[in-house]
Length: 76
Length: 188
Image (cartoon, rainbow over all chains, first blue to last red; front, side, top):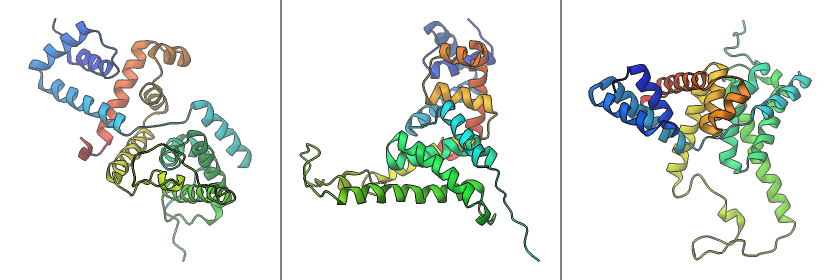
């Protein structure tokens, strides 16, 4: 049941994208119960996820960026 | 003796460095991804054209944002002048809200009206994240963007970039840790 801090961080990051299994989350919760560093990291990581959500981030596709680069190159 | 310019322009890095930042700025204002994309492209062209007027007293990005601002204003001028040609008053929306007008202009999201604080804060937050994202190694920011912003599945990202899932999670983890470190503590 015991996991390392590295493993805990990995599960924590996966769980931000709902890609950790319930079994992994259980192990993470147990780890957090005695490891303050990981508990802090986990809280911050979760907060960061909600910030990303609130920011309603948008980005251009890589293909759009490539065509922008091409167009710029022609002008240079 | 002339002062040396403090900043220089590097147009070859513009797309990688600023495209997403400018795009976020534009998309909030025009609420249309296609138009925002065009405005960003036009901004880069206009930047190249007026590069000789760049005095180097503002950072490159600030300078580009100033150009983009003009582009956004021009965009609204253009659609407003089109509207003026056929001033037909009609109800575009069904609403019980007496305070909202019938005119589209009155319905356009105004970041400075009620609820504006929230909108502005979210925009500022978005730009802060983009700012930090631009500082990451290219591949990390790409993987983070695909996963977090574009919501592409792990499997598809791995296929597209030719990496395996554990590579992907390591990169996402590093990107997130770096972003959290880069962002001002006030956000947390």
